Image 1: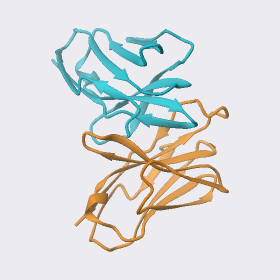
Image 2: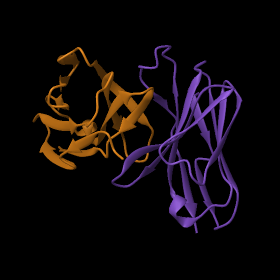
Image 3: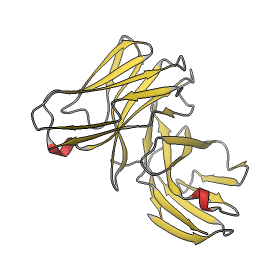
Amino acid sequence: DADVTQTPRNRITKTGKRIMLECSQTKGHDRMYWYRQDPGLGLRLIYYSFDVKDINKGEISDGYSVSRQAQAKFSLSLESAIPNQTALYFCATRGDISNTGELFFGEGSRLTVL
Amino acid sequence: SQQGEEDPQALSIQEGENATMNCSYKTSINNLQWYRQNSGRGLVHLILIRSNEREKHSGRLRVTLDTSKKSSSLLITASRAADTASYFCATDAKKQLTFGSGTQLTVLP
């Protein structure tokens, strides 16, 4: 089983719909991240969380919200999806206490908003 | 804004040749990391170099870091068709990793 699991892997939805992308991890890491990937733009940070009670906005948080339900679970929501939110979304974890270690990524959730 | 920018955006080489990718960044960093992404898949960590290191090796990978020029390079020696992927540098500063836009490497058999 994967250490970082994202569901769904693919989702097609319509403008205005609410969408939730879920991430769960078995690595025991406190730090979790949501990134968005668009062609030619690399990965951009949406939100990150250092523990259950800590949520921080990233570079592109507008239009998104998150919930850290437990140490192992970090969900990303699009309250009212719009076409320019069509992208590949990645969840990642980080376990290094000094916050300088590598990220472990899930396989991604491909979202298409029509 | 992108902290790290890779160059070139795309690189095509023959199997057995070496591949060099460069990364430039703008602000001070704690470390710089390189990741690999196979098409449509999650990113996988390759190597990390700290700000006080100048060169690091891991198997066929060699990474250099020049903090005075705010640049890093990733060298893959004796490339294989299986090395075909996108490669991203990520700069670590202020408790966040910021990724560049990547280099698409194609290794022709």
